[in-house]
Image (tube, rainbow, N blue to C red; front, top):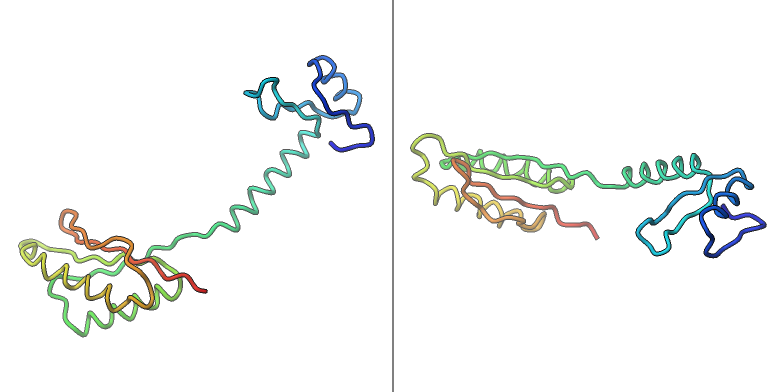
Amino acid sequence: MVGDNVEVGVFPIAKAISLAEEQGLDLVEISPKADPPVCKIIDYKKFLYEQKKREKVMKAKATKVIVKEIRFGPNTDDHDYEFKKKHAEKFLKDGAKLKAYVFFKGRSIVYKDKGEILLLKLAQELEEFGKVEQMPRLEGKRMTMFIAPKTKK
């Protein structure tokens, strides 16, 4: 605590404790690994309160990443594709990440190339709204691609 009679220096532990008791405050060890350990005379309850307040403000400022998903089939029709592309544009404009994937049912896994072409076409058409974070990758029966929104300037 900064007061009128602030003493700065290296003190033996007994003197530091007595100084803290004189001022009616707490002796708090700040960095125990330092040589000698660094301690501070402060009001510990107030310190905890301010620390909680700082953490709350930092948490409020942190941006939450929203991931929206769009699912295609390997043989998705042009109209359906356009409809889903419009939704993808809206998601990216709103600042959400986009997870586009092609789901292969049963024997449709033989159309892997169609699925990849579909995802690459989507990425190319959404180029002005976002950039590809992860190229199409096959994981089991799903071929997944991530698109992150472009940052606003």
